[in-house]
Image (cartoon, rainbow, N blue to C red):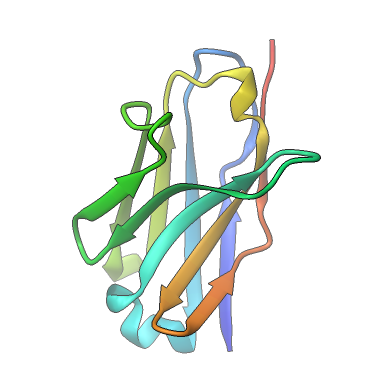
Length: 118
């Protein structure tokens, strides 16, 4: 059994910052460090899009439009992946989902709402 639980979402003003967390538990916890972890988001009426991914300790990639504002990191001792979001814009409003992948295995969290509005 694998569970991914996102937290840290909420309402922020444009230009503000927010830090999302995704805590993994269950069978994934024994080999968490070798999973590729990612953040995806989906706005109402739009397709889910990749925000950021991290493979291993430091191999990261980002959506081109977000690089420089968002940073993904992980703490393997805590089985947790983070997404630091800075300079938030209204168009960043979406449900943010945590993803874990290893070969053909893929797991998703329930999502956390991020709303950027004044």
